[in-house]
Image 1 (cartoon, one colour):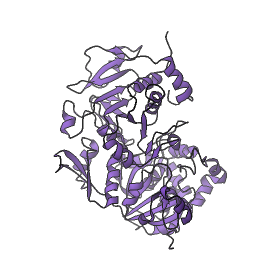
Image 2 (cartoon, chains in turn brown, green):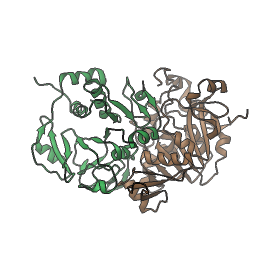
Image 3 (cartoon, one colour):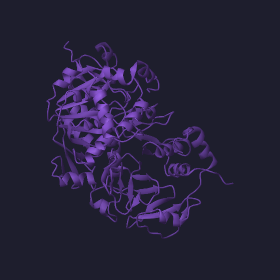
Image 4 (cartoon, rainbow over the protein chains, first blue to last red):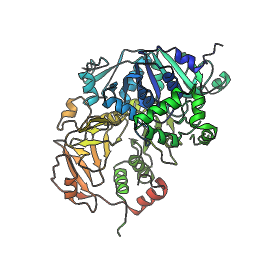
Length: 300
Length: 253
């Protein structure tokens, strides 16, 4: 059997150095692909177009590092811990081209992309400033037309098929059968990409997959490469593996408010660490990581 | 007998009483979640609770920091995706009540959860997430907000979620389905909307609050006509459930 498991550095190396477009999974404080995004930053991938449903700390750091040219998303936050200060400042100062959607409308664009259809109609966005601004800017991903079937007004959303997508999940086998435990809001996003990369907590045997096929949310046909990165979503939560690190998220929420403090964090913990393991050792350490390990019943 | 209770307790109880048994409700963190859990513990044991992230009918033992917190998913009956909840349940028309909140609400109930304009320029805060979708498709909407002049305004800095758009029949003309009912629950009163103009009207004022307080703290034009009732107080049983079962650490009440 040909294994899709590869080194994270090598996988990220496949992405062009400038102008790539990539969809990122995760949601505020859960299953955010931190390790993958840190490697994008170390390799200096510039002028990125990023698609995401609800961004978190990884999006904030990527934008703060000055690598994002365009962002299409529906929201972003650190939940109760704070806002995405670097993203918000970049929007306020006009440093990035931002295209805002609702959560369902951007998810429907991924759904259409995942099914290979050119567009999908919905009543989402009608009357909103998101739609008004997209239309005013001549964005060719949205059109308002009446339906040939019932004559009613709909927003026709262009399908999204990003060149790359990355999500973080609990398990995969070497073939790329991916198990996601808990809700899987990013499954359509993952399936829409031309190339899907998945970072996982653990690579498991194909025997395990065949014993629990109902747990496989993304079958291997969609997956280009797998990287095994334990704690690869830290400090965000991975259901049934570990909780979010509330101290780290609180600390990041504070740091990110100030550009100079953020830049120091970026340099010390991302750019000057050789890989995610070194980041984990530097910022958390084994003792702290053991403390956030999840109870198998509660999942956090 | 007169009970003592907090404003948040009164808001949670008021919202809870607007939910009916057997309904499907999309909730977010905080008071909406507490209101739904209270309804489940009292008059609506068959309420179905939906979190947009893809969780249906959990029984959380701890409050969380947001819908992405696995604490809120504990003992869920179904896990799915955004498309699974907001698409296949909400857009299909199966959601009876959607809860909403935000930075600003205008006289037609429209909500801004995206950005605020200041003298120094605009400040981006968050974005829609599922909020605009809930406002589009839920049959009834319950908006919960602090009652401040800068939060209940005539004109929004950004229109994230459409409720009655520009009043009258403007929402239907836009192509959107009309909700059966919309209420705003604040710390001072409950607002409804005029049947014809679809603009803000006071339905009831919370006990101890004067109409003058409501007018002074509202930044939007307000029609005061007809009878203004007093919001019904919480019962001893409701307060006991809130304090000892639903939010024992008093995170939100």
